[in-house]
Length: 332
Ligand code: TXA
Ligand code: MG
Image (cartoon, rainbow, N blue to C red; front, side, top):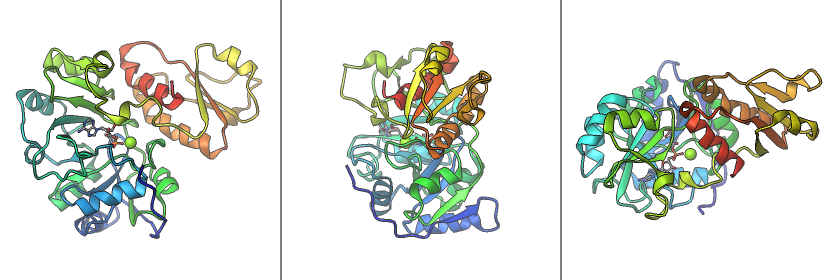
């Protein structure tokens, strides 16, 4: 585990649409500094992907284990191809359909990608993001940006600039504030290096959508046991709030035993007897739920929640990525 560095910056938070903000970010990145900025999924902590020293700062600021590889963000298929040693037809088809967007592709890495980016591995994850702020910064930089989610290691991903400041304030020079992220959970990660395309991390681009384009795609859970763990984001406890999170099949029964510091996340309104400030109602559709989930978990943490009870989600396939994130947050 890399120990987090001591705070040594006064972190500036700039509205992303302020005059010169994107240029300021690109200037810092070109000098090897870190910048946190919004993408359509979650906020990322970016560094020049070509520079081992710049990328090392990401691991320090996050306290990220050195064996957890980073996603490289690109502005085009052309830039993606510069980062990989092979661009199979499956990558071409997927990029045509889903880029720019919330999908990362794992491919053999080009020799030019520093080892620290891929945690010493022979593969690299590449993603072409859709968010105009991230795209604007990439365009000004002209080089790829390594960017994990802009949180301390193992904590919840940030979906607002203030979540980034809570976790990384004092450790990075600049946060571009682009408001709340549209999608709210991290990208789908698809591994194209094996015989069969393998879903390593579910996201808002679903297994079904990938299968519709590629035919056979397996989920990493089905292939578990075939090889070594390919993605640390698959570890059971990840993406967690500080509070203990419990998914409740029978919410009414759980409420009966709940203590003072218990918050509830549900897709329905609170029973009359329950204090409204400890009841967080989220939309009853996967897109709306994803958009608000992390913000709500961050708020529960800020309000001092010890336990968060979450109403169990529907079992329909379009909720799959949210099941995944709740299970990881619960450590189950
Ligand atoms: O939506 C996202 O993907 C956000 C935004 C900022 O783009 N980024 C993000 O990065 O979630 P991070 O580092 O928090 O998660 C990246 C995941 C990790 O689980 C990592 O292990 C996996 O992708 N990963 C990265 N490179 C990989 C590789 N070469 N092989 C397998 N898994 C990889
Ligand atoms: Mg992360």
